[in-house]
Length: 150
Image (spheres, rainbow, N blue to C red):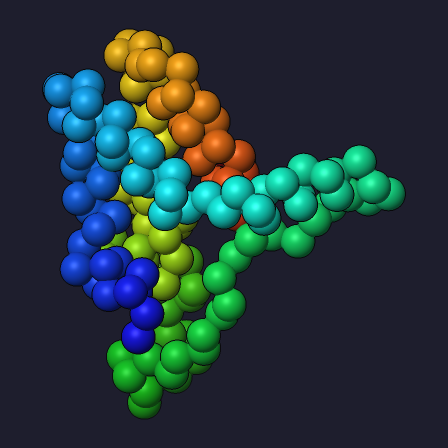
C-alpha cells in the first residue's frame, strides 16, 4: 500500500489527536500543522475556492472517500429484522476502524472539534496555528453535510 495508509494503520491520527492535548504549545502547534498536512490539499482547496463563485459552485460534491461495500460476516444467516442498520454498524466500529476508512470521520469520532475549539478559545495560539485550524475546519465542512453540521 501507500505510505499514507501505512502511517494511518500505525496510528498516526491517534498520535496527532493525543498531541493536541499536550500542554506544551510547541507540541500542540506541530500536531495542528501535521493534522493540516494530513487532511488538507492546498491545490484542491484553491480550486474549490475559485469554483465557489460559479453558478451552483457552492453545491460542490462532498469530499467523501469512495464507498467500499464489504459484506459483513456478522449479518450472514440472519433474517432482515435482525440485521444491523448502517448507523448501528457505524456506532459499533472502533475509532481505529473508522479512521482507517475515513480520516475526517475518525477525527470527528475522537472528539477533535471540541479540542480545536479549546485551542482557539483558551490557548490562543500563534496566527499560523489559527490559520491551520481554519483550513482544517474548512476541509471538515467540505467532507459531508453531517460533518459540516457538527
